[in-house]
Amino acid sequence: MFPHIDDRLPANIQAVLDTAALLDITEFRVFELAHVSWYGRKVEVSHIEPFFVDYMFNDIVPPWVAQFTRKVLRLYDHGDPSDPGQVDRGALGLQPVTRKAHYAARGAWYLLTLTVSLALLLLLANSAVEVLPFVRECYFPPCY
Image (tube, rainbow, N blue to C red):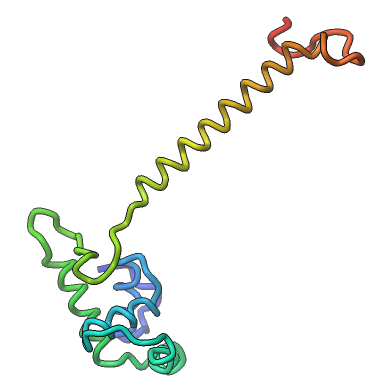
């Protein structure tokens, strides 16, 4: 499915990594979602930490996490025929990704900042001879 980082990783460890990459979340978040999926309720982070520590240091994946990763990877492989390769994040308890809107807003902000900065620079270049007493000639491009 995804390129494997290390071929020696156990299949269930690789499944956790693939699920985290597919959903664009952390491995710990995979454990949280798996717990909610298996038990039907959210719990404190301190309840999930011992299982995650076993996963990190002893390569032990609890059955409820393994089942969740199999479910997500199966949805990815055999999901909606009209939109293959997609997983319904809302059905898994995740918010939809709105990166396009975020990147568009940030891009518009950068473009506005760049335009205003360039306009101020050209205004300064055009009026430098009149405003600054130590500038005797205009060397900026608008004065050629």
